[in-house]
Amino acid sequence: MSDRKSMGSIPPVLYNVSEAAEALRLCKSEIYELIRSRQLRTVKIGRRRLVPVEALAEYVAMLESAA
Image (tube, rainbow, N blue to C red; front, side, top):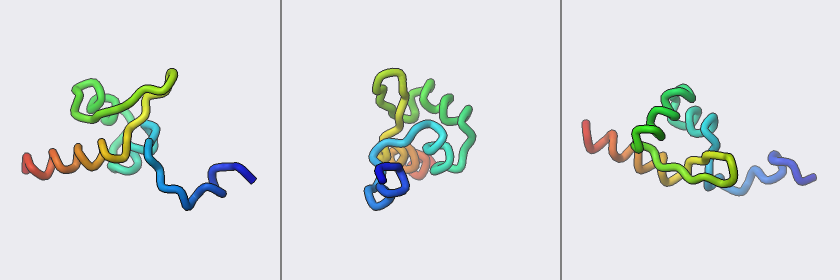
């Protein structure tokens, strides 16, 4: 079987926008706004916009330092 469930032991490196929204407990439109305002770093692969896991940690660290 080569579906995503069989690869569950490999930690993700990139999240799609929906997954990033779920991880940060935000809605997708808020994630797109963070991307537009350059507060959340992304990479583009083909037509897909993906969020590196490290970018989520950087964003949270930025929030903590501003608090």
